[in-house]
Image (cartoon, rainbow, N blue to C red; front, side, top):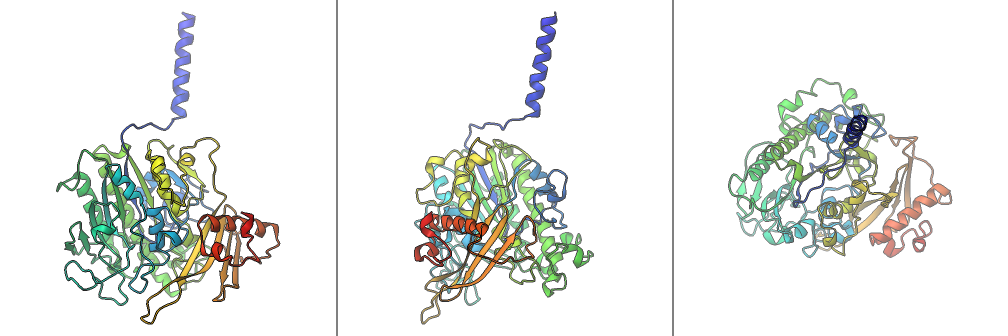
Length: 515
């Protein structure tokens, strides 16, 4: 009797221990993928950072935003606290996201518009969608694409641009440029949130007169339900959803939904912009309630898509990611440019990933860069051997899966390019690599060059001691800390085959041959 009682007690203890140390679930089906990335949503604009579970996940105050859907999702997911957009602009980020290449190799070194024929996603690049198409996935893309050089190829009005602006930014992407996506409901880039337009798989145009994230969520939900036979129910699916808000414009109720604006309209600007480095007296400060309203609206639409996955029983077999192209300064550092800078508000991005094989409700300080996303997702999905040899990013699936002794990066590269030479027609023929930088867990360093490729300016911040980056430190290239940062920069410049490495720019500062 004693032995039986002892045995039962032992079993209960083992079961309790197992419950308290829940191991990730193992799936045998091909996993689905849903990747949602609103544009220009900064990492700080998520309410859960201020909750007990995630308090201290970032060094600074969180924005006073309402994001109940992301708050719930984060508790089920792995939340990265140091993911970055290496080149924090829409098009370069997207090129790296899909190809696993840095901007100099993806073909997308600058934002795509009709004056920049040199900046367009390479048709021969093997993107994550190309790989998954070969693995018999349904591939669907919804929303903003912004990866192609605009040409006069309007399918509704042949021989004309789809964009009346000059230079044209918006464009139509024909089937041969969609990299394996067999279902298409997209546009190039068009910043009128309540009057969006889309081209479908066959080039038909739609003008729904509806706030774009809501309309796109409706389309995604219809696709998931397969209401119109949009996909093969016998195949797994991979869906990318790019919502334009909270990207500017964010100037009035014309740019967001009134129900979301209600949360912020009566809050004083100094309370909305309560970060230590923010200036609520800038003219742009008036945009804050509309920006945060769009964040709240995007949160709701993200939640609707997640709920549909749950309702159809596919949530547990779907890798769900929430991220963004880049952040938004929103009056921090007294600068108007919302992006394309190394400050944490623009350079850092949200990255939350849910998958039953990953532990729930954890933060990780992995310095994930944009080119790492494509190989990491393929690694998680079981296609590590399908990662193209050309890929420059790293597969960090092992880090997310908490495998022992998996190598983690010590730093991440920052890239800023501008227009280079132009021809007689005003078309950009090259890009100029005006700045490069490095971020570690403690420091941020930027080097800026002039037109002669000589050092023009430096920035250095101790992010532990100065989390709002308000104290720009003097930079001595012989200082041991700076030397270590420059060594890290040399490593990444070589790995990415960057112009700075190839031309040995600032070789009196950076020891390229040491790495």
